[in-house]
Image (tube, rainbow, N blue to C red; front, side, top):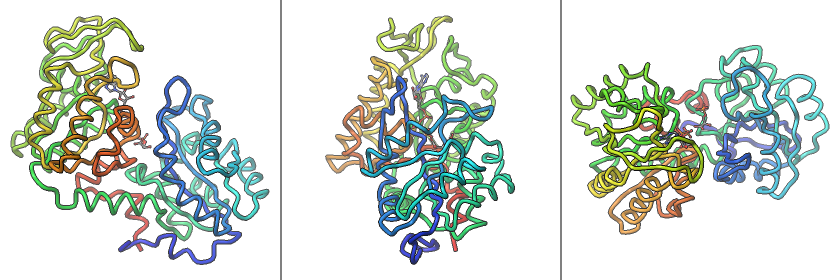
Amino acid sequence: MAGFRTLDDIGNARGKRVLVRVDLNVPVADGKISDFTRIERIIPTLTELSDKGAKVILLAHFGRPKDGPDPVFSLDPVANAVSAMIGRPVAFAADCIGNEAADAVSTMKDGDILLLENTRFHKGEEKNDPDFTKALAANGDIYVNDAFSAAHRAHASTEGLAHLLPAYAGRTMEAELQALEKGLGNPARPVVAIVGGAKVSSKLDLLMNLVKKVDALVIGGGMANTFLAARGESVGKSLCEHDLAGTARQIMIEAASAGCAIILPSDGVVAREFKAGAANETVVINAVPDDAMILDVGPKTVEAVNQWIDRAATLVWNGPLGAFEIEPFDTATVAAARHAAERTREGKLVSVAGGGDTVSALNHAGAADDFTYVSTAGGAFLEWMEGKDLPGVEVLKA
Ligand SMILES: Nc1ncnc2c1ncn2[C@@H]1O[C@H](COP(=O)(O)OP(=O)(O)OP(=O)(O)O)[C@@H](O)[C@H]1O
Ligand SMILES: O=C(O)[C@H](O)COP(=O)(O)O
């Protein structure tokens, strides 16, 4: 790929300690991995390096731990899932730096695979701290980044390491960038984006630029509630970042001046508990009870979303329309996903979706295989759409 060194350029890797940044931030439901797509996608890189006799040392984050090591965010169970998928043993070390990591690396044989514990257990990761980066680099001779979906983060393991070790793009990184360029480099118009999900604070700013790139922005999921609140609607106990109402209002103003339509839910399915089968009712948006949460968009909204999908020549989707992991709050996401899949099958739509949970939702709907392209990336994909430079990609450029 232009501008990058890839695994083709790595030369003789036998016996080399290769630090491979992967994205193992997989969706989990009831303590079990609910979607394996991110693991599946890294297998080509791991197999190739292991076959070349490299000592393959995996670096990854999991969730957003706040205060150091926390068993809830341990990658330990994920090692077994990677092992099952690749059909080779994958060892695990309980720290990504220090003696624990060094000891595990020192016992590796050529071709072995080792997963190190969550990089975010150290504050230096997100700060891209030079000392922490050096401590990570101490265990490697070569750095490979195969985590396109984390490339929007300028963290030690996604950006910093590339300054200290010879750096290469992995096969998934390469494939993701090629596929996005092919599907969305010069998109057929109208372009409609659907943005939902729960990462409101970290994705809201992205929408400011996205509205300048797309013809319509459909906002659903937890993301919609902040916009509804900004418009003065009561959203009860719904997931909502009330302090970001000003940003949401600004996005609506930007959209109006860029000629981008903003589509917000007109109805919602509300419940008092966040659990499967919780008693629920469909209400119009200005009638959400104070003690209820909107857990899905309602049928009228689905109709409107599907009409926008019908108008679109290109669809970009990140973030589910509702809490799809718990039935029946998967209804809107499943309906819209199947509708987009059908339009794509009919050759009327180029559909590109991305995000850990979004992919999981499309798989749940049985729609993923019909989409033109499904990226593992959520936030990174949206930033790429905006035209932003991704730190983890830029640093790989020769
Ligand atoms: N109305 C809602 N209330 C609460 N949670 C919601 C609602 N709608 C969607 N969600 C949650 O949003 C989560 C997914 O959001 P998220 O922004 O992480 O998407 P993603 O596709 O995983 O993107 P990324 O890869 O960037 O994380 C799901 O766990 C889902 O339950
Ligand atoms: O799930 C993702 O989008 C990536 O793994 C990045 O996770 P983050 O938003 O917590 O940095």
